[in-house]
Image 1 (cartoon, rainbow, N blue to C red):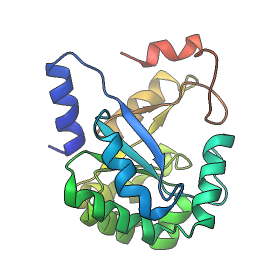
Image 2: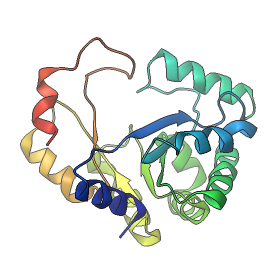
Image 3: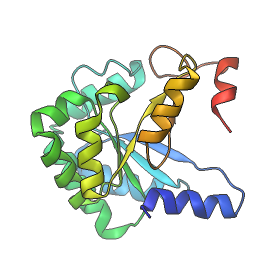
Length: 196
């Protein structure tokens, strides 16, 4: 059982939900990341580390700005790999990497999953990778023991939702609103059926 699945089992036994904290890796400075994550582990159940990318199409202005600053501070995927290794030396908290497919493709799918899992990654979210095109990543995550966390949206059909559930492991990433990430006044009513 993965660290992510074990955490959800633990929380389920206590009848609690999970707090998954997102942080852009390398923001504000790469060298501060172990401290930032250590602070987050006091309250979060799972940490999601976003690899900064120059064209984060699914992210709103706040995360775009954080990614831009992290890139300007010298954060690279290699830096994030080292950050994960440092975190794993002091914490067993489940770590999920959120990255865009371009980064995974450039690194090499098998090599990316192998290297990041060896460093301590427990799961991966690739927001611009549709489930229908995820077979190579799925194969690598199964090979190296990582969870592939796929996305569902309010517009996901029941048939597609079933396929995504069959492919995903760890948890599902429920996109609560159409459009980019960011603060909103309220959630769409259409997301309620996706949350059980």
